[in-house]
Image (tube, rainbow, N blue to C red; front, side, top):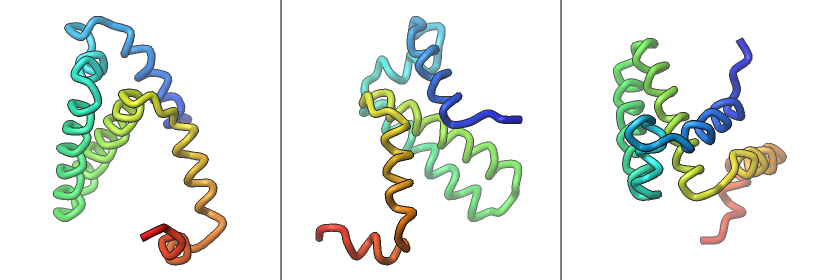
Length: 105
């Protein structure tokens, strides 16, 4: 299987074109960035709970929900996934501790 986050981004973009009554993605986007952000937050909390409980199935399902809702949130703000991936790539040149220390306070 070679499904990637880029594939997910493309699928979200395609589903965003549908009427909101026919697509969960379109419905979330119709609510604007605050709606997408709220749903992302809900899913993130559910993932934290699943990680705490430790069962693989729920962790995998909630992680998938978080990734999907992250992509929808980025779409709501017209931020391409490539921008996030470029930032991650930039950060790989140093340790997380050094990267955090370099941030403005």
